[in-house]
Amino acid sequence: MVRIFKNEAGKEAVLHSYNMLLGQWNTEIQELDIETPYDCWQCPQSAAAAFSRCRG
Image (cartoon, rainbow, N blue to C red):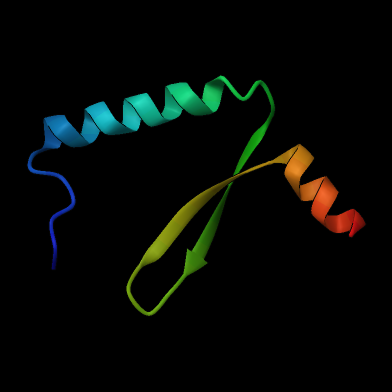
């Protein structure tokens, strides 16, 4: 399996930065789990984006 992060400290730094950026969206964020043959991916989705897709 490929290691994405060199160490746990690097992983924590990236995830902290990622969460800070999501917080700047200023909207509710939902995490969607998408299963693939390779892994389960967590994808952020804003409520506004979900609503616009539902409207077509």
